[in-house]
Length: 184
Image (cartoon, rainbow, N blue to C red; front, side, top):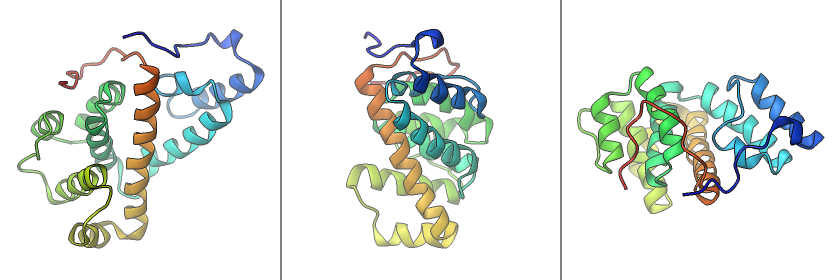
């Protein structure tokens, strides 16, 4: 698979691309990688996406552990190897159990999840597979996370779906990672 929209050397970027790239480099990500490699072709879109992603990834109302689980569920639903390679080790670092990660990778509902993980998993799966969330799951998420958390959870799913679509179409190269690649 050929990376259709690979890296552009910083010196070869337009002024607008350099500004957008530098904002990513200067932020918590520290480098231009993953989805930002193809997105740099549209610097205004990339800048808007990176601001949304910075909030959702680092400051969402559901916390980093659950955010990372939601990202893994989304990556699995879209068979997105770059998202998986980046976020699988982070999810593990924030306490998502190996068994949960392996089950998500295998498209199985993980056993022995803690309650908030089960809720996030089920909410995300419904949103991706049914394009909606049933009343019981929504009510449970609302009780657990409040409206702010539920909206952020929906946003995480939407944002990482957007990135998955970009990287799947661009065939973005998978970075080196300790994560086992997603099975086909």
